[in-house]
Image (cartoon, rainbow, N blue to C red; front, top):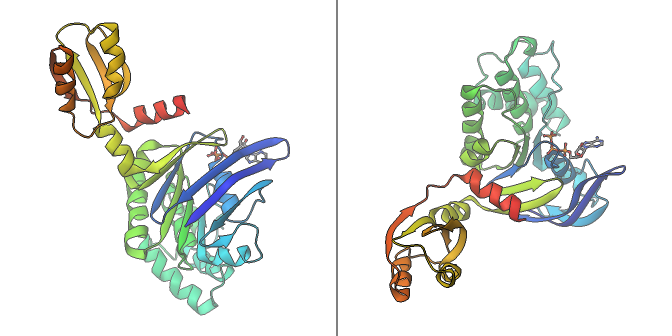
Amino acid sequence: MIAFQQLEVRYGATVALRGVSLDLEPGVVGLLGPNGSGKSTLLKTLLGLLAPAAGTGSVLGVGLGSPDSTRLRARIGYMPEYDALIEDASAYEQVAFWGELSGLSPRQARDRSHEVLYFVGLDESRYRNVSGYSTGMRQRVKLAQALVHSPELVFLDEPTNGLDPDGRKRMLDLVLKVRAELDTSVVLASHLLQDVERVADQLVILDRGEVKASGSMAGLRRMLARRFELRFLDPLPPGDEAALAELGQVLEGRNGLYDVEFAVDDPAAAFRWARARGAVLVQLTPRHDRLDEVLIRALRSA
Ligand SMILES: Nc1ncnc2c1ncn2[C@@H]1O[C@H](COP(=O)(O)OP(=O)(O)OP(=O)(O)O)[C@@H](O)[C@H]1O
């Protein structure tokens, strides 16, 4: 769906993306990173709004920077981080207006405006001026704008910004609905792990303009499922401690207590390993590790 290699994007002397490469499948991609890590820059580059200083890539089969890339915008929806809503116009009017800007006929744009505002749950208030809308409603108008022209792919930049827990849940449910009911792929940029964790099936971690980790959420969860705490009856001699690496990566531990990410699928291998070395493994406990710990490790080791 999206692939690029060695993408570099600059704002004058500031390098915002430093040779990033990715290959993303259709689905919901979570683009996670702290403020300033380059998430918005990446989305704008993929939309063709920013020209990369170096690198190549394609979005929906269209090469970045190719003459077709302006036509590509008709196939992509974009929900920017900050809104540019017209205060004294209704949601219905501005979503229809956006539809026309995205290439729909006036008639189509009006029909689609009704449909997408219903989809985002704003059908009852669609004729009210947005000046009276709550932050959550404004975010949903932005989402409706991004969806009005039935794109194959939408980029959502921090869609839960400024929302309370209920509003966040509602927005994330909508993201899932976009994928499930509209069959539209989503790239969701966020600095909040909980948001990304709830909706994404692929994860990309950006930090200071570099990709620190990427992969499927299922793969990450498998990694989590392989983490165990091993308690031996006696402290292991240094040779055996080093040999624990045969089971997987020893994340921390000493004095007979170790935190290991198994390289093998079968945790019972730890008992066989201990028996072969004459050690007594008294406890093997799954570590219900949190995703954020794994991510922090990924960032540290990258
Ligand atoms: N228009 C600009 N001119 C100069 N530097 C910019 C501009 N936009 C972004 N930057 C810089 O590029 C880097 C990446 O910014 P970007 O906005 O892409 O990050 P982000 O991860 O989306 O963070 P945020 O969520 O805070 O927008 C930052 O160092 C930022 O200061």
